[in-house]
Length: 279
Image (cartoon, rainbow, N blue to C red; front, side, top):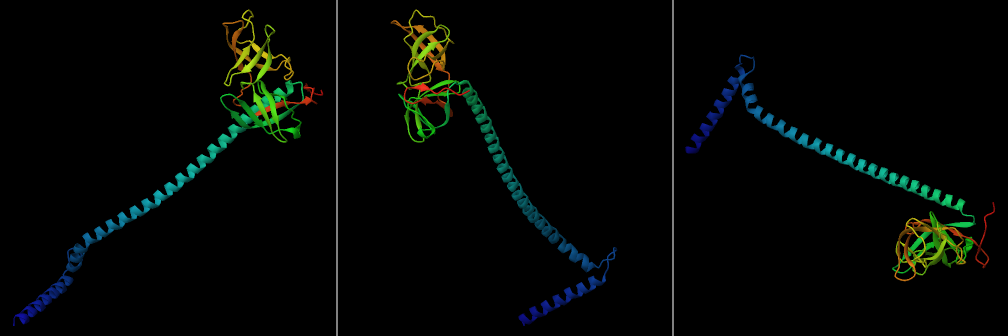
């Protein structure tokens, strides 16, 4: 009986709800809508607004993600473009620097009254005692042992070893290098020697001689290797020594630590005479 009563109650409740819905569908509001439609709209409106908010949020996230990817791609392209422009700028600077160097080398070649071979520096050996360069010219281009080497500014050194296609150049800064020299202003002779560093030393100049900072030092031509008159450097400091000779420091005329191209003067046979240019 209890189950039957509960079932009858459920059926009765359903009939009442259905009856209410039927009546509400026939009843109209002052705006002309049915009461049932208004109730349904009232129930569904919050759900609709919530779904619209969710869809809008999802759309915003998606389009934000798409925009972010576009911005990242644009940034990547801009970075690549900036890198290419920077590389092009450095290449242009290198071309300009090389042009300036070669212009200086050309001016030097025109001022040297001897035939010469242009060589590029391809190796550097700078220990605490020795200073040498390796250049890309050798016997195949007429390079001889002991041939003088000059660069932009002045004297660089001499060839101390030569192969078929390369040669080794001893720099003025090498401790074993010595050059017969001449002070241009006073015509005083001496010997310029390397010290293994940036400065050279002018030796065997008497304490009685007149030597001043800034005096130009050139080759004297008495050593049988270097022709007379090539710039060696300028006096940077001078003082009387404890013995007979002054202590004189000389700054090289050529930038020995930044050489990229040099001239190797050509000799005649084995008598160390330089080949004169044919005008």
